[in-house]
Length: 125
Image (cartoon, rainbow, N blue to C red; front, side, top):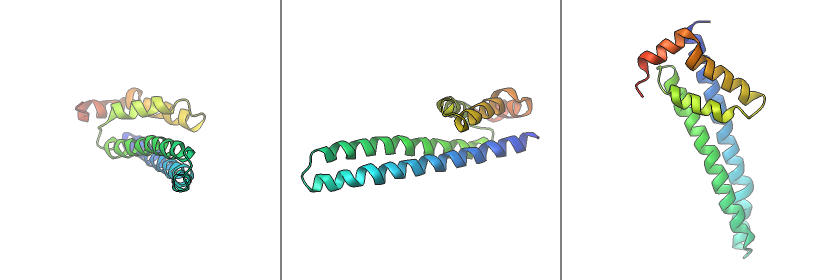
């Protein structure tokens, strides 16, 4: 595969993982925040725990999705190699999909010579 194919594959992987993270954020908002709001409206104090927890975890998952979308838009332009690497390190513990993504991302960004040169030329950290 040539440089464009690897960068395109990495871009698609980022879009998929970003969409998955946004779906997880939506689930946290629906499953934790909605019951929390209903409990608060009924005067139960435990509702605040669910509301704050749902907002926190939903925000983290949504932020991770947004970072994946940012990385996907910059990959084909030869930018955001450092962001790609940070996302890969975050996903390395998510066996097996995250580990495969992490190994492929680090290989494309740092070890595959044509893409490494492309990032070196275009990535202006």
